[in-house]
Image 1: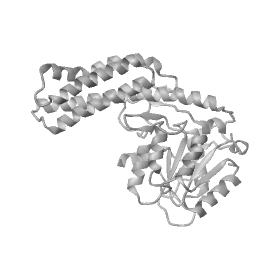
Image 2: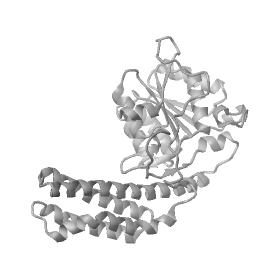
Image 3: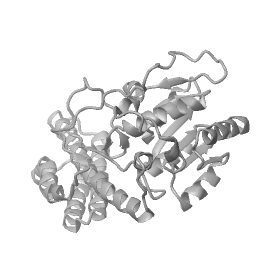
Image 4: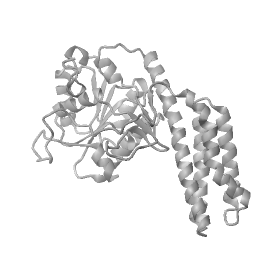
Length: 350
């Protein structure tokens, strides 16, 4: 590498040809221009797609190290990113993902955050700018966090309040290849499996946090005599969270915990049927629910690998920024100009 400082590290040219890049862009002129520039820069294994279905078919065969997606490739583009991150599609949910978005589209900016993209660039995007950003994030990748409905980079700033959510150093095949390491499909699969076990175990933590929050809301409503349909809906949420936790426990081979979650879910269902006039025993079950879940999942702690950063040791991710020169604050509309959006800034708007 050119520099040992992660902020300034670049891909060696003789390594660029090992990187698998998939680029999805419906505009033929833009797509072919970016493809030509990438290949001229040494990224010989760059494949371009103008239809999402063709890209999906290609990823069924092999997963890229870097996926660059335009938001207008297809109406389901964001669903694809979410499915990759949640391991519902593909063989590696931790590939590097950069999204190119149309300007002045706040909704798509938020969707890019919530689906778990690593980076976002606003069109028109200069190919050189993509390369600078990709190289920066390859060697400065932010740890992932997991909630009940999110898998992706940690978005909190360094000044945010402490979090109980674990951070995970996920597989980064782009970095491995850029450093000259040869990875077989079997090696990547094993690394993904280890990280995915950590992801699912971290999701159990998130289930526990959500159970605690919803239980407190329900108990507060009973104390304040605000028993209405909203309370019933919150009880149903508890059932859903417990059933999701059971599925998660099965994935990480914790059948006893899965059985406990299902048993708790059935008890809460009985509570839902009688929510207008619950017995003291039912309310007692609700008060003990979070504690029971936390005790039951303690056996999963041994499943965490060295990839996991414990909450007490984790530091909020600083807002990533590329090496100088900084990007212009606005898009002036000139050909090839672009604006880089910090996802940390966007997260504050979500």
